[in-house]
Image (tube, one colour):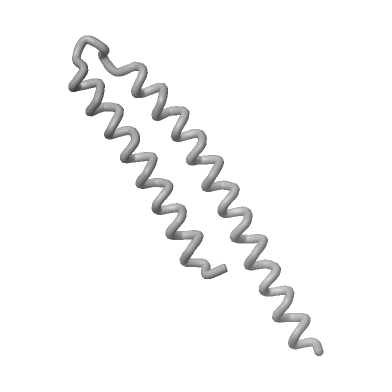
Length: 78
């Protein structure tokens, strides 16, 4: 009986840890996305090609973070 209780506690701790990690990742993705929008708006409007490149680079960085965070969450296997 104690073994089942111990396994349940470990499983619950994993789920809670994954929920916290997911919350942190979503918070950071939201903050980074807001920063991405600011950077894209601040790029020089006089040069549309440069503005597009800046916007794409910022989006790529945010997307890369989101993928890395999602991979870490998936790695936990919960």
